[in-house]
Image 1 (cartoon, rainbow, N blue to C red):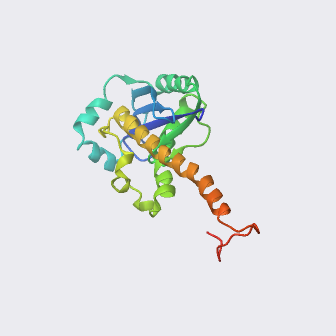
Image 2: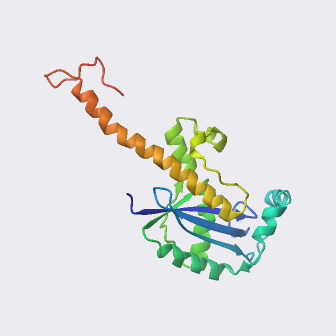
Image 3: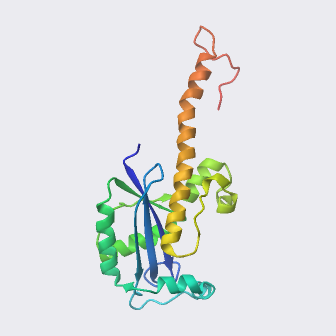
Length: 213
């Protein structure tokens, strides 16, 4: 079993990049490789000084009144919330791996906020992107690796509500199911190679006309 802890993280924001825009809410759900949910963290944040919503995200939020209400309750100052979050991640019983979809969005916000308000990031400079993992596993073109095209057995019965904690839990379970399939594929490779080697003749040469690609 891996000593890594997978920190599935979801960010809700009012624009595409941090600084000009604000992170409204974030949440992480931590999983072991065998899909044990071992902890969660979530916080709703006050807006950054001088930041304002992007028109596209501002219009989108008007279509999500329940999620908007949920992320505007019990607001915390970013410096307090992110300091508590970094301490929480650093206390996890394993090496933390940031997991998101798309990681390019969520990690950009989280890294910026952690460096701006805490001065360090417990995930170093890297994040694991679920979309990229799906690209490697499904054989589909990268841009066609969207959730409706994923195998149905990758999904558990978790809601996707645009409330950060709900989505972090759902996403983490998805990742663990993908990882289970990936481990099965990896375990099958050595056995397949052994079988192919044993199918040759006593000369030690492969009997196939061409080596398998």
